[in-house]
Length: 302
Picture (tube, rainbow, N blue to C red):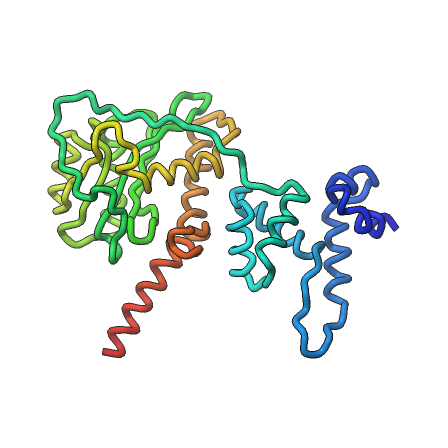
């Protein structure tokens, strides 16, 4: 049987290639072995070990779900989160054998218009990117995305406590409204108490009188990175890397609307599902929800 031959030679031939040569569907092959694996009786007193074929089905499904964004470390954590107990080295070898990897990395340029005579605010963070609770420190930045219609400019606002994107804005220009709109969205969604620190670079949009006036109206403190130092706003720079490498790299957008739809889809995935190593491999939303639940439990116990 073709399936048996593929299984026998899978150490030497990738399953996907063997299926293509023999004229059988890859999904049919995996489903065949998944059924056989599920039909095997478990020995008393032992935990059932998932077969490589069944494990590969789960890996491929997750790989498709996260749009090829996970390498083997996050894939292993995702499998554990879904109740699939498997060793990380086994996941690494299986993914390597079948050519399953995260989308390729590439360098992206981020522009900041700091050649202006507007007031510059003090760097209040000094690279301390931790917060003890939500809505204490937000960071923000602007990046750009190429489309056939021209550039699309994206601003994001991140809550440093959970790394959740709490506000964003996308426009075909880099005028001040691209950052003020993101700030308005974040404020209306979160309604933070006075005193929140809002950290950004020293671009003209963030230094503008309109934006600084908006910050003061929300009773927020403005903080800015040093000139030409991207590490002073590392969490937001990291977000751009994840977005562009994990989702946008290699894609061509006919319209700005197409790019906007892709970005919104990714931001939803990032907030709700993407495992974050800084947060102990849970999503930003899960991390914050668990913190809120713990606070409520502490108040009940007090």
